[in-house]
Length: 216
Length: 221
Image (cartoon, rainbow over all chains, first blue to last red; front, side, top):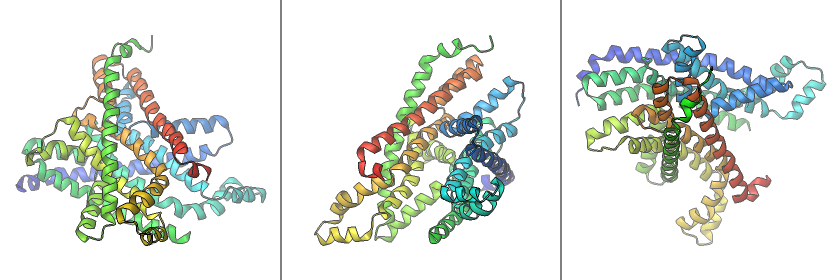
């Protein structure tokens, strides 16, 4: 073991951590907005809107994220849009996580009995009121564990941006290995860094799950 | 002509090879993950503390680091310990280990779903520990975890695409080769998207139908 090589490259690792967190944060925020919109579109009575949402969700959940990433990175230029690596990574991760978040949110909404929603509507509550006073207070807690769980997987999935040359943590690790030929030390440190980000969140999910079980 | 599909049809054999490799990797990795998950779940419930600790560490480490990193570790770092695999085998091992950690949790939930009264009843009837697991716990647990199991198969199929990063010519890998030769990005990715879609949805639909045949009691619920 030779830790000097890792220590000398610490600035690259730190940069990698920040770019990974940045990419994850942007994808999670945008993906949540897209996911919420898609989930609402799924409940729409307009068949076209409903189908479009279903098609989007099915397409992005039924194909690998890595392929989506390549498709967007190589394909968008053909549509006349020139994308740099960061934009391609953000677009791919946003669309991908939006599809998953839509299903998580939908499951949450459906966890509130249909009768309650019908009752609220027959009382004359508008859709926003129905959401605000009936669905969200009950569905919010149930949705939280799978949602945070998915956010963790987004953090891990940022590592796929490696393949299009975005310098997140794994990419920088690989370039350190190329220079130092010290795979074991570098992978150990990088693994620990990912673990340090994801493990506390995983514990939080486990605690939230217990809370949800207790309310049942 | 906006689209040129001949560039795709000319490379059909490459796509076919990629498809078969994707299926092969998925089958091998999922079989491994199934076995690992079963062993892991039993180890997590073991009376021996070291076994519990090993299983818990395995699950937490594999679930809290990226699969891509795990693939790189198996392929690039294990050779330093004298464990050298070719890229397909290394990828299969890494994918099996990754999905196996999630399968451990799935199996654990399945085993926990069996009420302890049943296990006590079986024990009082004189069944041994192995008999209880084989005849009482496992048949019911597998029914209870069948839906997440289908989900895990889908995750394995989608995850096999990551092996592209270590130059395995599976479906996505072959698409990239064709793309770099023809620059017909839209056409080739449209075709491969369709194939992945059919693979994942076909598998989960078939498994759902199979589940209805295998577990008629559950289908009626």
